[in-house]
Image (tube, rainbow, N blue to C red; front, top):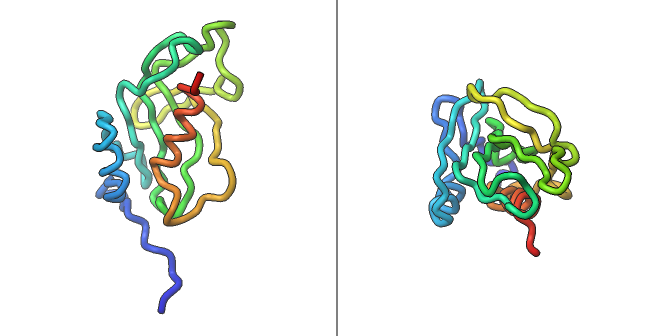
Length: 140
């Protein structure tokens, strides 16, 4: 028996997510694509819903950097365009004041991290999107 971790499923030339992630995204009817960036990839989801009560937009383009070693490596931080400001203060949210260029576009970076330790074989795009939804569209 082998205890080796599974091989990364996103070689730079292929830019595909694991089948379970693609099935999840399709089931949620997200308009998404994978874009290459060096040896990594960028998952881009168009028209991602955002709380219009909290932010100055009701939707944005969401980007998650997918490391070439995913799903063995954790997903970390997320990015949006257009940039989001808090409606109440017209300020950027905490730890979301930085901007970075990825996949040929300028993005607002939300420095948010997966809570606890990334569990290989359990955590995935769906679990990371749950964290993002709780930030951008929290329950009332």
